[in-house]
Length: 339
Image (cartoon, rainbow, N blue to C red; front, side):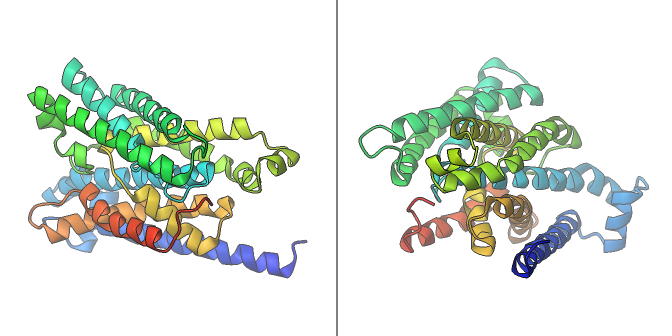
Protein backbone atom coordinates (compact mmCIF):
# COMPACT_ATOMS: atom_id res chain seq x y z
CA UNK A 1 0.00 0.00 0.00
CA UNK A 2 1.34 3.43 -0.99
CA UNK A 3 2.29 5.84 1.84
CA UNK A 4 -0.26 8.62 2.50
CA UNK A 5 2.12 11.34 1.27
CA UNK A 6 2.72 9.49 -2.00
CA UNK A 7 -1.01 8.86 -2.46
CA UNK A 8 -1.73 12.56 -1.93
CA UNK A 9 1.00 13.44 -4.44
CA UNK A 10 -0.49 11.12 -7.07
CA UNK A 11 -4.03 12.39 -6.43
CA UNK A 12 -2.85 15.98 -6.82
CA UNK A 13 -1.16 15.23 -10.15
CA UNK A 14 -4.15 13.25 -11.43
CA UNK A 15 -6.46 16.10 -10.43
CA UNK A 16 -4.24 18.46 -12.39
CA UNK A 17 -4.46 16.19 -15.43
CA UNK A 18 -8.26 16.10 -15.17
CA UNK A 19 -8.40 19.90 -14.93
CA UNK A 20 -6.17 20.21 -17.97
CA UNK A 21 -8.38 17.76 -19.83
CA UNK A 22 -11.40 19.91 -19.02
CA UNK A 23 -9.55 23.04 -20.13
CA UNK A 24 -8.62 21.35 -23.40
CA UNK A 25 -12.24 20.36 -23.96
CA UNK A 26 -13.36 23.96 -23.43
CA UNK A 27 -10.65 25.19 -25.80
CA UNK A 28 -11.77 22.69 -28.45
CA UNK A 29 -15.34 23.91 -28.09
CA UNK A 30 -14.17 27.52 -28.38
CA UNK A 31 -12.12 26.63 -31.46
CA UNK A 32 -15.20 25.23 -33.16
CA UNK A 33 -17.54 28.02 -32.03
CA UNK A 34 -15.41 31.12 -32.68
CA UNK A 35 -14.80 32.37 -36.19
CA UNK A 36 -15.60 35.01 -38.76
CA UNK A 37 -19.25 34.03 -38.57
CA UNK A 38 -20.98 33.87 -35.19
CA UNK A 39 -22.80 30.56 -34.72
CA UNK A 40 -25.01 29.91 -31.66
CA UNK A 41 -23.74 27.25 -29.28
CA UNK A 42 -26.68 24.90 -29.86
CA UNK A 43 -26.02 24.98 -33.61
CA UNK A 44 -22.33 24.38 -32.96
CA UNK A 45 -23.12 21.20 -31.03
CA UNK A 46 -25.65 20.02 -33.60
CA UNK A 47 -23.20 20.80 -36.39
CA UNK A 48 -20.61 18.55 -34.74
CA UNK A 49 -22.78 15.62 -33.70
CA UNK A 50 -25.77 15.74 -36.06
CA UNK A 51 -25.06 17.92 -39.12
CA UNK A 52 -28.16 18.74 -41.13
CA UNK A 53 -26.51 20.10 -44.28
CA UNK A 54 -27.18 23.74 -43.40
CA UNK A 55 -24.65 26.50 -44.03
CA UNK A 56 -23.60 26.59 -40.37
CA UNK A 57 -23.19 22.81 -40.28
CA UNK A 58 -21.01 22.90 -43.39
CA UNK A 59 -18.82 25.64 -41.90
CA UNK A 60 -18.31 23.53 -38.79
CA UNK A 61 -17.78 20.22 -40.61
CA UNK A 62 -15.61 21.48 -43.47
CA UNK A 63 -13.65 24.33 -41.86
CA UNK A 64 -13.64 24.54 -38.09
CA UNK A 65 -13.73 20.90 -37.00
CA UNK A 66 -10.74 19.80 -39.14
CA UNK A 67 -8.54 22.69 -38.03
CA UNK A 68 -9.47 22.11 -34.39
CA UNK A 69 -8.69 18.40 -34.51
CA UNK A 70 -5.45 19.16 -36.31
CA UNK A 71 -4.61 21.77 -33.68
CA UNK A 72 -5.09 19.20 -30.91
CA UNK A 73 -2.93 16.59 -32.64
CA UNK A 74 -0.17 18.95 -33.76
CA UNK A 75 -0.10 20.80 -30.43
CA UNK A 76 0.25 17.53 -28.51
CA UNK A 77 3.04 16.43 -30.87
CA UNK A 78 5.01 19.67 -30.47
CA UNK A 79 4.58 19.70 -26.70
CA UNK A 80 5.80 16.12 -26.36
CA UNK A 81 8.68 16.71 -28.77
CA UNK A 82 9.82 19.76 -26.82
CA UNK A 83 9.64 18.00 -23.46
CA UNK A 84 11.47 15.00 -24.89
CA UNK A 85 14.23 17.10 -26.44
CA UNK A 86 14.77 19.00 -23.21
CA UNK A 87 14.95 15.79 -21.20
CA UNK A 88 17.32 14.06 -23.62
CA UNK A 89 19.73 16.99 -23.86
CA UNK A 90 19.14 18.26 -20.31
CA UNK A 91 18.76 21.64 -21.93
CA UNK A 92 15.73 23.85 -21.10
CA UNK A 93 16.20 25.72 -24.41
CA UNK A 94 16.01 22.58 -26.55
CA UNK A 95 12.96 23.14 -28.73
CA UNK A 96 12.24 21.87 -32.25
CA UNK A 97 12.05 25.40 -33.66
CA UNK A 98 15.11 26.79 -31.88
CA UNK A 99 17.28 23.78 -32.76
CA UNK A 100 16.40 23.88 -36.45
CA UNK A 101 14.36 20.65 -36.53
CA UNK A 102 11.19 22.36 -37.77
CA UNK A 103 13.24 24.43 -40.21
CA UNK A 104 14.83 21.31 -41.70
CA UNK A 105 11.46 19.63 -42.06
CA UNK A 106 9.98 22.73 -43.68
CA UNK A 107 12.84 23.04 -46.16
CA UNK A 108 12.48 19.39 -47.17
CA UNK A 109 8.73 19.73 -47.74
CA UNK A 110 9.02 22.96 -49.74
CA UNK A 111 11.82 21.47 -51.85
CA UNK A 112 9.79 18.37 -52.68
CA UNK A 113 6.70 20.40 -53.57
CA UNK A 114 8.36 23.37 -55.27
CA UNK A 115 11.00 21.58 -57.33
CA UNK A 116 9.56 18.11 -57.87
CA UNK A 117 5.86 19.05 -58.15
CA UNK A 118 4.75 16.43 -55.63
CA UNK A 119 1.31 16.99 -54.13
CA UNK A 120 0.72 14.14 -51.66
CA UNK A 121 0.53 14.61 -47.90
CA UNK A 122 2.18 11.24 -47.29
CA UNK A 123 5.18 12.33 -49.37
CA UNK A 124 5.29 15.58 -47.34
CA UNK A 125 5.49 13.54 -44.16
CA UNK A 126 8.41 11.37 -45.28
CA UNK A 127 10.25 14.39 -46.67
CA UNK A 128 9.69 16.19 -43.34
CA UNK A 129 11.04 13.16 -41.46
CA UNK A 130 14.27 13.24 -43.49
CA UNK A 131 14.61 17.02 -43.12
CA UNK A 132 13.99 16.92 -39.36
CA UNK A 133 16.47 14.06 -38.84
CA UNK A 134 19.13 15.76 -40.94
CA UNK A 135 18.71 19.06 -39.11
CA UNK A 136 18.89 17.43 -35.67
CA UNK A 137 22.04 15.53 -36.60
CA UNK A 138 23.70 18.60 -38.11
CA UNK A 139 22.94 20.78 -35.07
CA UNK A 140 24.29 18.17 -32.68
CA UNK A 141 27.48 17.65 -34.68
CA UNK A 142 28.18 21.39 -34.88
CA UNK A 143 27.13 22.10 -31.29
CA UNK A 144 29.23 19.29 -29.80
CA UNK A 145 32.52 20.31 -31.40
CA UNK A 146 35.16 21.66 -29.07
CA UNK A 147 36.29 20.82 -25.55
CA UNK A 148 33.11 21.92 -23.80
CA UNK A 149 30.94 19.56 -25.84
CA UNK A 150 27.23 20.01 -26.52
CA UNK A 151 26.38 22.65 -23.92
CA UNK A 152 22.92 24.31 -23.97
CA UNK A 153 24.28 27.60 -25.26
CA UNK A 154 26.31 25.94 -28.04
CA UNK A 155 23.35 23.87 -29.19
CA UNK A 156 21.08 26.93 -29.29
CA UNK A 157 23.66 28.92 -31.26
CA UNK A 158 24.18 26.04 -33.68
CA UNK A 159 20.41 25.63 -34.03
CA UNK A 160 19.94 29.33 -34.70
CA UNK A 161 22.58 29.26 -37.43
CA UNK A 162 21.24 26.10 -39.07
CA UNK A 163 17.67 27.41 -38.84
CA UNK A 164 18.71 30.64 -40.57
CA UNK A 165 20.33 28.67 -43.39
CA UNK A 166 17.27 26.45 -43.81
CA UNK A 167 14.94 29.47 -43.76
CA UNK A 168 16.98 31.15 -46.49
CA UNK A 169 17.00 28.00 -48.62
CA UNK A 170 13.26 27.59 -48.14
CA UNK A 171 12.63 31.19 -49.20
CA UNK A 172 14.88 30.69 -52.22
CA UNK A 173 13.01 27.59 -53.36
CA UNK A 174 9.66 29.33 -52.93
CA UNK A 175 10.79 32.35 -54.95
CA UNK A 176 12.20 30.16 -57.72
CA UNK A 177 8.96 28.22 -57.92
CA UNK A 178 5.78 30.35 -58.15
CA UNK A 179 3.72 27.22 -57.56
CA UNK A 180 5.58 26.51 -54.34
CA UNK A 181 5.28 30.15 -53.23
CA UNK A 182 1.55 30.43 -53.85
CA UNK A 183 0.80 27.11 -52.19
CA UNK A 184 3.02 27.55 -49.15
CA UNK A 185 3.28 31.21 -48.23
CA UNK A 186 0.80 30.67 -45.37
CA UNK A 187 2.06 27.18 -44.56
CA UNK A 188 5.59 28.55 -44.02
CA UNK A 189 4.55 30.65 -41.01
CA UNK A 190 2.52 27.84 -39.46
CA UNK A 191 -1.21 27.76 -40.04
CA UNK A 192 -4.08 25.47 -39.08
CA UNK A 193 -6.44 26.88 -41.72
CA UNK A 194 -7.11 25.32 -45.11
CA UNK A 195 -6.66 21.71 -43.98
CA UNK A 196 -9.28 19.00 -44.22
CA UNK A 197 -9.87 15.78 -42.35
CA UNK A 198 -7.86 13.90 -44.97
CA UNK A 199 -4.66 15.58 -43.72
CA UNK A 200 -5.53 14.67 -40.14
CA UNK A 201 -6.20 11.06 -41.14
CA UNK A 202 -2.87 10.72 -42.95
CA UNK A 203 -0.65 12.18 -40.22
CA UNK A 204 -2.68 10.76 -37.32
CA UNK A 205 -0.99 7.32 -37.25
CA UNK A 206 2.49 8.89 -37.24
CA UNK A 207 1.59 11.29 -34.44
CA UNK A 208 0.01 8.49 -32.39
CA UNK A 209 3.07 6.26 -32.79
CA UNK A 210 5.41 9.09 -31.82
CA UNK A 211 3.29 10.03 -28.80
CA UNK A 212 3.14 6.43 -27.50
CA UNK A 213 6.90 6.05 -27.91
CA UNK A 214 7.55 9.35 -26.12
CA UNK A 215 5.33 8.46 -23.15
CA UNK A 216 6.96 5.04 -22.83
CA UNK A 217 10.35 6.74 -22.35
CA UNK A 218 9.30 8.61 -19.18
CA UNK A 219 10.85 6.15 -16.70
CA UNK A 220 14.15 5.68 -18.59
CA UNK A 221 14.50 9.47 -18.87
CA UNK A 222 14.02 9.82 -15.11
CA UNK A 223 16.77 7.28 -14.56
CA UNK A 224 19.16 9.04 -16.96
CA UNK A 225 18.50 12.33 -15.18
CA UNK A 226 20.41 10.86 -12.20
CA UNK A 227 23.47 10.44 -14.42
CA UNK A 228 24.48 7.88 -17.01
CA UNK A 229 26.20 5.57 -14.50
CA UNK A 230 23.22 5.64 -12.14
CA UNK A 231 20.86 5.05 -15.05
CA UNK A 232 22.82 2.00 -16.18
CA UNK A 233 22.83 0.71 -12.60
CA UNK A 234 19.03 0.92 -12.71
CA UNK A 235 18.97 -1.15 -15.91
CA UNK A 236 18.51 1.69 -18.43
CA UNK A 237 20.43 1.59 -21.69
CA UNK A 238 21.43 5.18 -22.32
CA UNK A 239 22.18 4.74 -26.02
CA UNK A 240 18.92 2.95 -26.71
CA UNK A 241 16.90 5.54 -24.78
CA UNK A 242 18.50 8.43 -26.67
CA UNK A 243 18.01 6.72 -30.02
CA UNK A 244 14.34 6.00 -29.36
CA UNK A 245 13.86 9.53 -28.03
CA UNK A 246 15.43 11.03 -31.15
CA UNK A 247 13.21 8.81 -33.30
CA UNK A 248 10.10 9.98 -31.44
CA UNK A 249 11.13 13.65 -31.86
CA UNK A 250 11.71 13.22 -35.59
CA UNK A 251 8.38 11.44 -36.09
CA UNK A 252 6.41 13.99 -34.04
CA UNK A 253 8.07 17.08 -35.54
CA UNK A 254 8.14 15.72 -39.07
CA UNK A 255 4.45 14.83 -39.17
CA UNK A 256 3.38 18.04 -37.42
CA UNK A 257 5.44 20.26 -39.72
CA UNK A 258 4.25 18.44 -42.83
CA UNK A 259 0.66 19.09 -41.80
CA UNK A 260 0.66 22.73 -40.67
CA UNK A 261 4.13 24.15 -41.30
CA UNK A 262 6.83 25.11 -38.80
CA UNK A 263 5.33 26.42 -35.55
CA UNK A 264 7.90 27.69 -33.08
CA UNK A 265 7.99 28.11 -29.28
CA UNK A 266 5.20 25.65 -28.42
CA UNK A 267 7.81 23.01 -27.58
CA UNK A 268 9.75 25.57 -25.53
CA UNK A 269 6.95 27.14 -23.51
CA UNK A 270 4.85 24.10 -22.66
CA UNK A 271 7.50 21.90 -20.94
CA UNK A 272 8.66 25.00 -19.05
CA UNK A 273 5.15 25.45 -17.64
CA UNK A 274 4.71 21.71 -17.06
CA UNK A 275 7.89 21.50 -14.97
CA UNK A 276 6.76 24.53 -12.98
CA UNK A 277 3.54 22.66 -12.17
CA UNK A 278 4.80 19.13 -11.47
CA UNK A 279 8.59 19.30 -11.12
CA UNK A 280 11.15 17.37 -13.18
CA UNK A 281 9.47 13.94 -13.06
CA UNK A 282 9.01 12.97 -16.73
CA UNK A 283 6.15 10.62 -15.82
CA UNK A 284 4.12 13.78 -15.21
CA UNK A 285 5.92 16.34 -17.40
CA UNK A 286 5.16 14.40 -20.60
CA UNK A 287 1.40 13.89 -19.96
CA UNK A 288 1.02 17.49 -18.79
CA UNK A 289 2.81 18.70 -21.93
CA UNK A 290 0.55 16.47 -24.02
CA UNK A 291 -2.51 18.35 -22.71
CA UNK A 292 -1.06 21.84 -22.28
CA UNK A 293 0.36 22.21 -25.78
CA UNK A 294 -2.96 21.83 -27.67
CA UNK A 295 -4.50 24.41 -25.33
CA UNK A 296 -1.72 26.85 -26.23
CA UNK A 297 -1.85 26.18 -29.99
CA UNK A 298 -5.64 26.30 -30.23
CA UNK A 299 -5.67 29.39 -28.02
CA UNK A 300 -3.18 31.06 -30.38
CA UNK A 301 -5.35 30.10 -33.35
CA UNK A 302 -8.43 31.57 -31.67
CA UNK A 303 -6.58 34.78 -30.76
CA UNK A 304 -5.46 35.08 -34.37
CA UNK A 305 -9.06 34.92 -35.56
CA UNK A 306 -10.27 37.49 -33.02
CA UNK A 307 -7.60 40.20 -33.22
CA UNK A 308 -7.53 40.29 -37.03
CA UNK A 309 -11.27 39.78 -37.69
CA UNK A 310 -12.72 39.49 -40.27
CA UNK A 311 -9.32 38.23 -41.47
CA UNK A 312 -6.91 35.93 -39.62
CA UNK A 313 -3.47 36.07 -38.03
CA UNK A 314 -1.71 32.74 -38.49
CA UNK A 315 -1.23 30.60 -35.38
CA UNK A 316 2.54 30.41 -35.92
CA UNK A 317 2.81 34.21 -35.71
CA UNK A 318 0.82 34.33 -32.47
CA UNK A 319 2.91 31.59 -30.82
CA UNK A 320 6.07 33.50 -31.79
CA UNK A 321 4.71 36.62 -30.05
CA UNK A 322 4.01 34.51 -26.95
CA UNK A 323 7.23 32.50 -27.01
CA UNK A 324 9.81 35.24 -27.57
CA UNK A 325 9.12 37.00 -24.22
CA UNK A 326 9.23 33.61 -22.45
CA UNK A 327 12.65 32.88 -23.95
CA UNK A 328 13.91 36.28 -22.78
CA UNK A 329 12.48 35.63 -19.30
CA UNK A 330 14.20 32.24 -19.05
CA UNK A 331 17.57 33.71 -20.01
CA UNK A 332 17.10 36.67 -17.65
CA UNK A 333 16.33 34.37 -14.72
CA UNK A 334 19.30 32.18 -15.46
CA UNK A 335 17.32 29.11 -16.48
CA UNK A 336 19.74 28.18 -19.28
CA UNK A 337 21.87 25.70 -17.27
CA UNK A 338 21.34 21.99 -17.89
CA UNK A 339 18.36 20.30 -16.33
